[in-house]
Length: 297
Image (cartoon, rainbow, N blue to C red; front, side):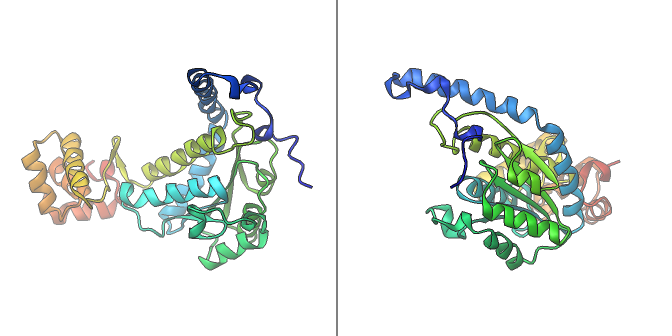
């Protein structure tokens, strides 16, 4: 039998013992109050998150990958964060990868038992040819999911960087990983429902890992997503707005420079800021690994 008694994510929350007797507003209010605790819990582990980012950035710069591994809600959050990176940061689908126990079908339908198979965690990493240059981030609210443990152990075996995100202190996955990130937001409003505070905590950490790592590899200028892909009308307008904010030009100028720069936001900004043609801008960016701020100095 699995012992869940010592896990804060499995405890009853004393503030919601009468949840089924509360008015809608009372229940929503206490839920909101509990959610406020999540950001404070994440604040406590910022040094560990920083350690992870410091490993992810050089990995990505040297052709490595950021790979999320999880089951259930945790796995879905990893897959979601990975899926958002290409449209937001212009990354290839291979740079940030999300693996979920049970495969892609598990994103929308629970695959019972998959998370209990530690060999499957290793198998899924072997299937994508994990290398020592990659960073594997294992996610498990409980901190004990065998699928994640198997993946982290394999990552360690081939000398990849291993990171664990759990929502319990002294977790099993934290003991395996080189960098344990243990966010403990406390018992859930609905006992054991870790899609709530634990899910929010994991999402916040994932937001930090991917966003700040992308800043580190030059995907951001000021606070602008300068590698955004113009794949629909909304994003075409966003690209124009980004060029305008970065350079203080009008929309017509932004459109013209985007056209000249083959739709590339970074090129358009660089051309405007140092008053050069597209070939010079390309050379400047190539020489700084895509960092606009360095290219315009």
